[in-house]
Length: 107
Length: 514
Image (cartoon, rainbow over all chains, first blue to last red; front, side, top):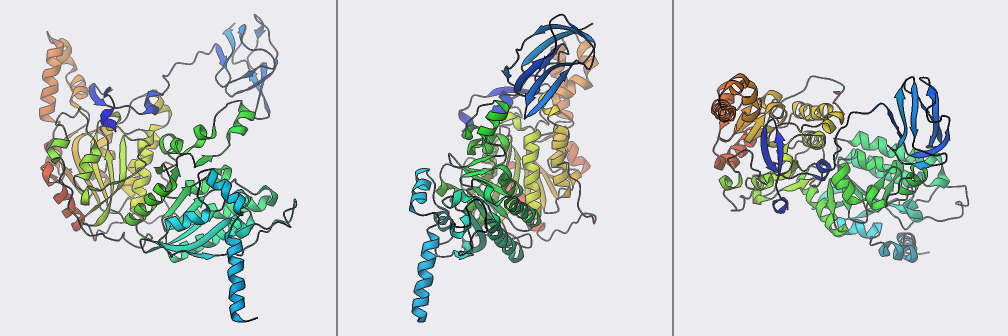
């Protein structure tokens, strides 16, 4: 079965091996260094409330919005003292996991 | 009443109960492309060997209008029979009776046959086809599951436990199969998940079909929950029978020997394996070239195919094979392949099956995803499993055996009994390309033509280290053998190891990196 698959290259410690890939290997996600200024949803859910506005100054630990998922209201908090740059969500919006909610920057 | 009329009455009662959920429900089952629980048992076991128990058990539900209802056999059939004349205990959930839902008496029937299996030291086969807990019975059905899981754990490593998923198996119910040794799934019929698509949608807003979430292919290829995949129930039963033919009845026995057979005359062994270690081949061909009748019964074929596990016979005796597959991801070890091999090694060790390891790997798979997925603790499982195994352990190094991969794949250092290497074997800390770049960094960078120097140095390293003779000089491998001698050397090693005695220090149990 594998013989009919086209052989691909896999480089390990400088050597180029001819082989086939698995679906899991092909679908693996490339790692990106997280950008601290982008706040993504960590779970799919509903935006219950948003407490901040664009350009608003916010202190570390203040609640920015409520994301309801699994029957729980999750408070999304400010990770550092800073400013709200852009709001990408609306109240009552249903969002998937890893959805960009807010852009912030340090003050 | 005469004895005769008593017997006729018994027959009438049996016939009534054996109808399960009745004609309509049976028609529905057939419309789903499924056999009934009784048909399944009869198709799987030797002809006329099935003997049923607890046929007349009644359910114990008293609430929600259940008290007046009759549920034949309480939705599960239990009994004993034989496969290839070897005894087995079996239960099959009957979806035609209340959706095969599990209540107190249903669970009690299952645990009764499990207790039998453990006491009599015979394999247990469970056919799962159930909507889940019988909600009307409340905590009693949860208790039932718990009693089953507990017995699965007690029996683990004592008797073979086989789970066959022939319908839904959802929620807590999935944990019984997960605790057993081998899980069989069938296309379009098996469905396994903890939370179903409707719950996922209502809670998380993610939409997915049952098949995509927990169908047979998903478990055979992505999750690694299933060990055998079949397109039809009958094909699945053939797989179960074949498995039963390879394994012993319990941990007190050895697998029954078959008549020795020579391998089929296929491709010459030298033609299977290319000399260039970067060119792939199908490792299964190599395994088949040394097994009796060139038969190899592969386990978990679809999951982590960069490692191969399965059963074959040599001189009639069952052998467990663990082998790197250069055809997929160059045969690297990664999280999934380590899990897959480690569990199989522990299975073989628990059931007195010698392990033959065929080695050809460039090491571990590099990548952030692997590191973050815990390749350290997953990879450690394979070291643990080989180290603690006391069955005969034989290794054949075909080509590459680099770095941690060399150690992990049943090296002498983990107490392999016999290690053979082909003359093509390269046993080294890493491949020549990587090593030359490090060892000769200065020479290469300072050369007039660095690329030319690099090639020169790779060649130099190859000649010095990338061969079996350095390890042979240390006695880390026992003999460099000709490829054509592989079967005879392994056979002899198995013969010599037959009375192997080895033991681990006394302990309650180890702490493997689960």
